[in-house]
Length: 183
Image 1 (cartoon, rainbow, N blue to C red):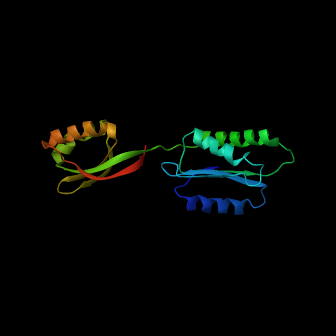
Image 2 (spheres, rainbow, N blue to C red):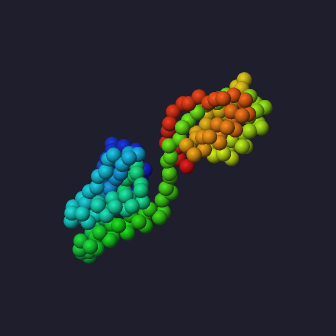
């Protein structure tokens, strides 16, 4: 199984639960990579010969450039000894097959801005702003419309131009923060 996690504590909590649930398994091997820059990396062979389980699982995660994931493979010994090479192939294949059934979510850095626009102007440019790849996170309909917009670097200039030209101002945007958002 491959599970999204955002902290080492979260990964350890899940591992405890899985080990308790599968307490009679021969092995509960795992690998995880956590952090936007892969700050926390760990794997365990859980009693399998060194480097034959957790490391091949970790290599699959690294090869697929994944982060904030915990991979766990629970094995019940079936009486057939696979040998070191067989174990490596089995754990690697298990992770690769599991990944094919996963929905991979890509998070990208996005600058979040707010802008206040009159109803008439927003009705004229909303479609163009969305077509320019702005992510509209929130729209509040008050005396004027308060829009919270997410912009990737490559789309900022286009969206800024559309809105600033429509409002006939130089800079209508108020920077809020940079966040990682799912695409």
